Length: 468
Image (tube, rainbow, N blue to C red):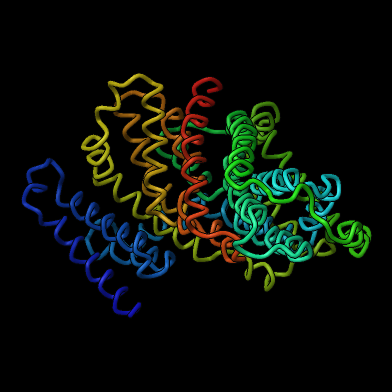
C-alpha cells in the first residue's frame, strides 16, 4: 500500500512539473522557458519533499540529473554549484566535530554534571533538560543532541516508575528535549543546517558577511526568552503530578562516579572544540588585524582534520562516516544546484514579486511578523529545516534586494523561524526522537506546540527589531 502511494506521489510530481512548464498563463507571465523549467523542477522537488515519496537525499541527486536534461546548465556546472560550494565543507566539518563530541562521551558526562547540580525537583528537571538541549544544540546537530538526551530522560522516568502517556511530567520532560533542541539551533550559525545555508546564501547572493558575533547577539536573547516561555507553557499545560522524583538518592552521582575522570579523548575533543569556537568568534578580528583571511568553512575543516591527526586520533574515518549524515549533504548539494538555476533563470525573482511584492508597503514590524508567520506555516509541511532554508532563503534575499529592504532583517528572522518546528511531531526528525519513547501523543505535542509557536513569532520579531 505504501509503495503504491509513494509511486502515485512520484508520478503526480512529474505531471505537475510538466504542467507548470506548459501552462498557458505562465507562458505570458514574463517568465522565460528556462524559468518555467526551473519552476517546474522546484514544484517537483517540493512535492517529493512534502510527501516524502522518496528520501530527501535521492531527491537531491534527481535535481542534479534533471538540470542538464532540461538544458538549464551543464552536468559539470550542476555538480560544481552544489558539491563545489564551501557550504558543503562547512557542513561536513561541523558534523565531524559533532560526531567527535558524541563518540568521546563528553556530552553525556556534561549532561549528568548539570543534572547533579539541578537536583530532582520536577519543574527544575524540565528546565534543565530544555536548557541542556539548547546549549548543546548551539554547537552540534540537533538530532545528535536529542539522541544523547533521550536515553538519559527515559532512564530517569523508568527508575521513577513513571509510565508512558499517563504522566504529565513524562510528557513535559520529553517534549522539553524536542523544544530545547529547536531553541538552541537558533543560537549560532552552526546550530542548524538551515543557519549554515542562510549565512552562505547571504554571502553569495547579497555580499553580506554574518559573523558568529552578529548572529549570536540576536540568537542568545531569543534562546533565553524562548527557554523561559517554553518552560512556563509546558509546566502549565502539563502540571507535574509530583513535586520531585523519588528513587535511589545518589543515582546521578553514581553514574558520574562510574564514568571516572575525564578520558584522554574527552580532554582532546574539548580543546579542539574550544579552539573552533574561539576562532569562529574571533574570526572578524583575525581577518582585520592579522591580515590572515580565514572563513568559517576553513575553521570547521581545520578543527575536523585535527580530530584525525596522529596522537590526537579522537575518531577514525570509519567511525566518523557512520555519524555524518551523507543524505543531508547530498540534499544540500542538490538544493544549491537547483538554487543556482532558479536564480540564473529569473524564477526566484518572479516568485518573490508574484507572491510577496506588497510586503514592501508594510511597516517593518508587520514585514518581519508576516515573514516569521509564513515560515512557521511552511514548517508544518516541510519535514526538514534544511529543505525549508534551501527553498525560502534565496526567494527572500531576492525579494529584499528588489524592494530595497534590509536583507538581514528579512532573511535573519526567516532563518531563525525555520529552526523551530513545534506544531507537528513530523515537522522535523528532532521531534520524532523523543516521541519514539512513547511518553506523549501527537495531540499533546500539537496543543502545546501551537501555544509555543504563538510565542515564537513575536519573540523572534521584536528581538530582531530591537537588537539588529
